[in-house]
Length: 452
Ligand code: NGQ
Ligand code: ZN
Image (cartoon, rainbow, N blue to C red):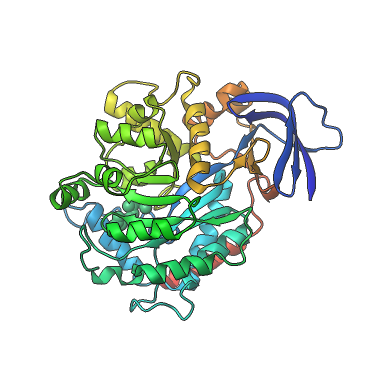
């Protein structure tokens, strides 16, 4: 399939170009040239940007967004939230997980996310028994992505233990648990019959709490060497303190010294790191997966983005527990956390890119691509993932191209994403997805059943 698009303005790399022709062959950009005529092209309305990557999602958690904001104990914390989340885990069936993911992924597309890394750890029946088809749950979240047309890196999670040093899992974790053999079989099964342009896989360790060193080493040598590797790390101080008590080292320090990590790795949260650890991460070119709205919601802390960026480190964004499905809100919170910490303005930028919104948008697209092991966006050889903005709001209509992302991120309070294309296919038109009304109805009746 061939299609040629025309954009009056398009963000190519870090530069806004005019009158851009985008030639797409079989979902991939074959040519992209500025200063052309629109003859014979499908004209895209509004400024065109690469789609955003959502590098961290637990789709099922969307079902409880906003329901854990009631103080049940003055000591409410990440860990008491986790108990509530486990309460949801205990009730979900595969069909419901698929329905939640389907609607969520539509919301993501409408928000401008064209790719999602699904950190999937809800594998088994309530009893902890595998389903007859052990991939049943994983296939639900993959099918959701296929149905709505979002790109997906499926990250089946290895989860075997409840705490550092291989502690036995607790009952609330029964649905997550694999031994390494079963995990590798699941990965193999999931590798069959997938459209490699829009769907791939990665290796995923839930956290240093959930796996042992030898499991990590064996998994790393058993699975393809180009797969991305994701892990939750150093999100909470309790986790850091327990890691130090167990090993004498902090989580990132332990991972660097005992297993090692490189540019294939995505360190989710990495909130609590010291200067040395930031240096190690930057040098490794691992991507730090920041989830600003969830990290704020769970009271995690503030990752030192300014230090990472100053050292040439990489980052991307994820919506994680999905208390928020908005690209602009994640980017704004990411920057505002640093401002609130430093009591200063304009924190996350680079020598080459002084515009905060542009810098975090572009860096999150490229970090997200790396974390998913994909090439998507607006350049030759990339999967044709792009979005257009509706500029009818006067603040956008009057913005110069180089002011658009900042206006969107910091200045307006509605979602201006208009049309969304994944692998050259239009999946959102004028803000609407064709399955939206149906999926909303399905989800509403599913939630009534689930939550009463
Ligand atoms: C999760 N979520 O696995 O869903 C985790 C919480 C844990 C976040 N870290 C559970 N945001 O870390 O044990
Ligand atoms: Zn997470």
